[in-house]
Length: 497
Image (cartoon, rainbow, N blue to C red; front, side, top):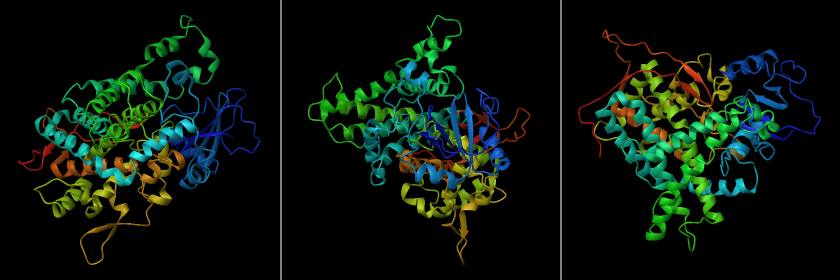
């Protein structure tokens, strides 16, 4: 079976496999339709976990309209296939709507496992080696300080400001660009691009992905609205990722000065041409565009997303929304993290990257954000495993990652607990290459928010607190349903330069 590794919970096999090996157990299949009537349209991980118990197997098989699905319901099963056999399970399925009709090319996240992918991946991995992470700290801290100040001025706009923070960080890291305080054109362009990507990749959204022959239907034909959508979406990715790249290239040609951001660092070609792009420049543009696309509103490829990504669209924003919701619903975790921050950092400065090892509770809180309501919905079956995380796996509890320090009041991380980032960032050759920067950026954002602000329930028109609810929307991401909160500074002198 020639599979395409997608995330810690599922593999999609391509059509036309010639191998006749026994398949794992699964629900009964109908002629021609297979399991198309069984496949859940939302909150898929719940049904997959139920089937794992019903068939007493952590590996399941489903078949939908000619496509074989292999569902992995345990860490061991995912490791066996996606790590130990990554040379087999590192491909990607061919999405007719996105590739053939929309013309979405040059995307590292969706490329097949071939030499072209290796060239793009090599560049990405080179720039995000752990030893390079400190180079990008200024591009993380400056927009973070602006974000904290914006919360002082307009705390009711916290969700919009969080989205802007994610875009500012990735544009700084990838291109060295400074964004406008509001309505930045690069961020707005990326919003449109991400809307196309999430709509085009939504499972079952377009029949042409199951029956590729439909791509030959003319756009005027009844029922061919997908062709008209594809035409309107064509070239959006190119129009989004090319302008910021060309800005950097023009600056490089004129100045040729060193700078610590991705495109400038690798644009060291002998004679760059102002208008046309060499093959090497195309790789650089596409690689930076993958960052821009996958995390333009996020933190450099934070978390593996449902089915399609090594990183994922908009995931940094989603993870921070989960953090805010967790602080609302589990105020004891916010209180204990702030106590640690006050003890270690004090109140005169913000946390910095060098403080991370001195703040084990905050680190554990970050781990719990990844585990409790993971951005990648299908990873939940693994990250909610009661055998690993205990009977209260459904609750947000950072202390599950901690041990008491003998004779002291403090905590230390439990080395025997499998941290969730090893699952959230993917497996094998498709593991997220930007995970080190993603983790440091997310940690800095979370610790700075906790240090500077209290997150409490919103107040209704009668002056009563609005009870927060743990409610999520099932889409390509596991995103919190819209919710309200109150964000207030913990002290009067909170403005940062």
